[in-house]
Amino acid sequence: MTAADDDRLARIALSAVGEPGDPRLADLVTAHGALAVHDRLLGDHGIDDLQTDPAARRSATDPQRTLADAARLGLRFLVPGDPEWPVQLDDLAAAAPLQRRGGVPLGLWVRGPARLDELVSSVAVVGSRSATTYGADVAADVAATVAETGRAVVSGAAFGIDQAGHRGALAGGGTTIAVLACGADRAYPAAHLQLIEHIAAHGAVVSEALPGWAPTRLRFLARNRLIAGLTTGTVVVEAAVRSGALNTANWASRLNRHLLGVPGPVTSGPSQGVHQLIRSGAATLVTSGAEVLEAVGAVGEHLAAEPRGRDRARDRLSTRQQQVLDAVPAVRPAPEASIARTAGLGLADVRGMLAVLAELGLVEQEQGGWRLAALAHE
Image 1 (tube, rainbow, N blue to C red):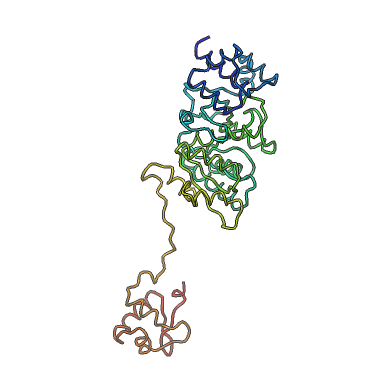
Image 2 (spheres, rainbow, N blue to C red; image 1 turned 90 degrees about the horizontal axis):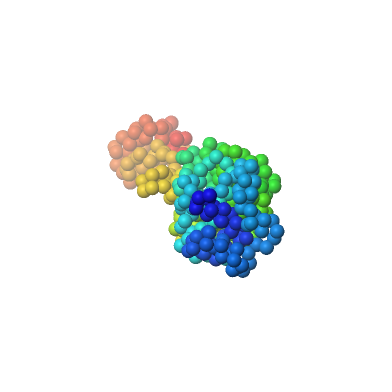
């Protein structure tokens, strides 16, 4: 076996005896290498709180079997240095732990054809599991717009906003990546089995946890840093003040990624966390996929058009023509002399401008004078 093979197997063994995102284990591997840390553990120099269940120990003592079993399930194991390794995750080495999770992952289990080294320009769409119709619609629309430009959409396959983001990306004809808190061979939540299998067939399902492992709270926290780390920006759509999506948002800020927030109604509980991110200046307010693309793109790329009302016929009028138009009554026709007095202009000037306004369809002449035409009310 080569040194690279030994390192890969050592990382699988260490994954089996440590929780995903354990910053102590990650720091030791970064500082000394996976083989040295593995040898230390074999020499009974333990690290507190490591896995002790029999299944984990079997994986630790027979990583070759774990790798072979995973391959039969269609999983590949990526480690730093592999051509497909997403190098943007290496930024995690310099970020301080959050809620006892952090560090560069020992490796990633991947199921699906999408390559993780092509996710540098990807965008994460995350938010509340208890999404409103408004939130789900916005998340899907944002994801579809992003996916249409060739950028992958990354999320966690959970209920609510995650699901809407994945489905929006698929509807936009793009690639979507699901990062799970359980093994990449499993479907969680089980109700999303069909969605996760579709993502695995056309995009990629990714996990730091060993195949077969169940999701836990700590593993969700570890998973969140991967979602933020893999992407160039994170869009938060609906997150209450204690939402797990805010943990992902915190990681995006720590990693100097773009953090974007979609506002909701000020009375909406599911949007309170997002509003606080925007109010504190941590997140940039966005209201559409076009604005997301402008925020994460290069300077001058994907510039979003500023919203404006539609042009009206009266917008092209001069100041004096506007004066005359404002002096024309809406219902009962008025003679030219009356309109001139109300406008404060000479009668000859008013006659000429009334003719121009009539050509524009803004006024009409009837018996007894002039009144506004229907176009003037638009």
